[in-house]
Length: 474
Image (cartoon, rainbow, N blue to C red; front, side, top):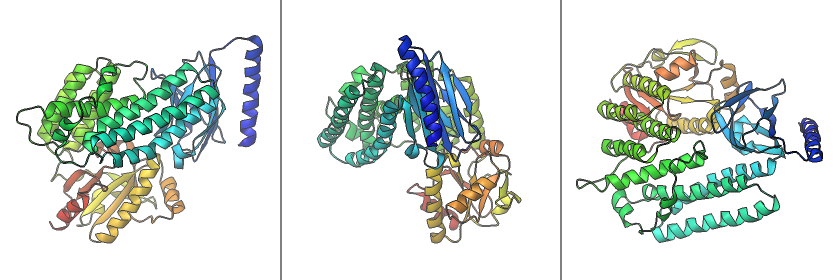
């Protein structure tokens, strides 16, 4: 790898010297690197306008791609289902090295343009720890909470200042780096009422200082530059949640709040429709909140109401079809329905109908993917714990990837996990649609009579064991 990187970097330096001597700033960039433990034979690179280039890996899992007529800005590169971002500006030559088993943690940039991107990935990883800390800070009272997150924000800004001077950072880098800090700060404030330990979210929201959300006057709900940017969209989602809570708790008949209240969720879609005019941002927010609601809702009438509101407001025809089909799949998994006939393969490549694996025993069916490797490790540990506590329950785990049994089998052996009751779908794409597998934490509980008890359980939920005890005692 060292020789490979040095060779490419040497080549790119030659191009750079040529440009310097000619004193012409050419509008191109190189993006390349190496993928360890690849999940596919290619990576994709997508710009802010969703134009995507597919780049094949060579026999050594490496790639190099020249982008002509570069649109400087943040690009998204994907491999399998994992993704990260890279800032590309004219004459950059950025190489990335990553291991899919620890996608974000292993990611390192080299080459011209690497410093700014290593700053962003390091900030991304640091924010994962900071967010856990902020969850604890959310238990503080408003004045102490605000003081704490102000301190975090100021420390980030102070850290950024010498970096921008030292590296002669571009205006574009400064704009994105400052926005990252602001969006995280704003998101923390918007999430605060929901994360605070108090039960009455409405009363707590009303108790906040009048200037607590003073930054809202500067919010652009139709920012075309950041429209595809994760941190911007994440902030908007938190903000929409809080704005809707403000509206919902203002009703004269308001009594209490929970996430599945129909009126609250319909209000949320109305607020998006009123605030956001950019079609891309609006469609993204509408789809996100509608999918989130129907994925955890067990009342069909409520689901129909929210879906109908979504269909009236979105202009994304593909999203309409996808969500309509997803809703149909959920209807086939209603409480009391039979589990659909799905064919799976065990690690010996023997075919089974999933219904035949239940054998008059309460059964938990969960799913995993190499794409979400951390989820895989955590869920395996959780299921191992549950098996010890509930030996009368049958636990089945299914890999959802478009692969044969050898890769998941090897993953289990490498991790020194037991291969018993582990399966892959015979027809992954069709099976995922039939079982409406979204989100990845989705778990199906089936009773001994092969009837669905819950199609949207979560093994990490605080009430999961209560659900298990219910099916055991049937």
